[in-house]
Amino acid sequence: MVKRTYWVAPNGTPSAARSARVSTQLPPGVRFDRTVHARALPSASVQAKTNAVLAVAKSKLGTPYRWGHNEDRGQYGFDCSNFTAYVYHHALGYKMSGASKVQASSIGWRVPRSSMRPGDLLIFENGKHCGIYVGHNRMIQEGGGLGKVGYLSIGPGSYWGKHLTAVKRMYN
Image 1 (cartoon, rainbow, N blue to C red):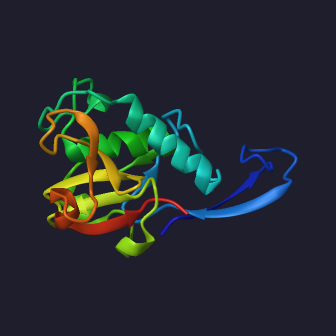
Image 2 (image 1 turned 135 degrees about the vertical axis):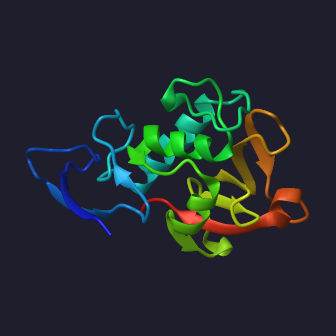
């Protein structure tokens, strides 16, 4: 586990004034990429991180499914796990695997479904599919029968709700 201490202002931005001390940990399987302009730094509030994740994900609505593609590599489109890796990369500066099986086995902190909150990484069928929880029993994901980035239900009785196998917390 990587543990870093940041000095932040009350609004969550880095501060030379050192008005508040916040200790954060990066989740398992993730490293911080200082070369990307993340929307929320590791020292940001949970709400700022959630807003960043959901904003980046929403900005890709309608992007077509392309197996193995990730726009960070100059390719157009995504598959499900490259989409989630892209979102966390641009929202939080996280560098992580774009392989769904790796995301299922070694990325993030596993939490119970009952503790799920917006911004959590969702794993389906032990790594066959993944998405990001947006709240109200919905996720944003790539593919999943839509052929593009879009929202799908994970509510009781829904296909994806029945196939959810893990919820991964990506920040605290």
